[in-house]
Length: 210
Image (cartoon, rainbow, N blue to C red; front, side, top):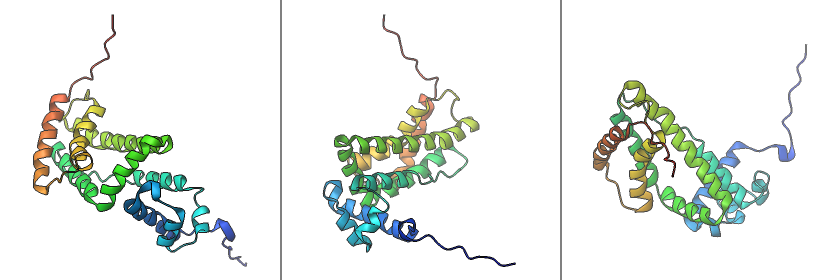
């Protein structure tokens, strides 16, 4: 019995993963260096060491390239370790967020994309979807654990809870652009958990105007 060797597809069907990864890395670097407005396919190709054709085989335009990059980053698994307590879980998450926001690329790219989102509805929608995915992951894992342990009420307003968790560190580092020292994280986590316990009540229903 003979077996035939399967031939790899030729031409445009071959999209090597290492080239795609190199292009995405180049996009992040270019966004950090020049911003979305001045980013060009030529510069991305030059930094990635590929041809422009290699990029256009994967993405139709600069916008598609950046939107795909945002989706890829947003789709990464969120590391939410189970420490056995809400306080420990929140503290770990704050450390992860602070480390990510402290990175030079994040510090430059996030404000630029937020500004671009105000001018470009497609980027705005993609960023909003990424934010919603992140909030749902925090709620599904971290808040659910706390409810199961009896640390928070089952009636906890999860959107408010997630805002209380991620809001302080994001405001400090991404909006106010002020540093967050490692020694401050436990104190911030304790304050957030205290606020969560106060807010752990049945969600307020909208009042009907009369």
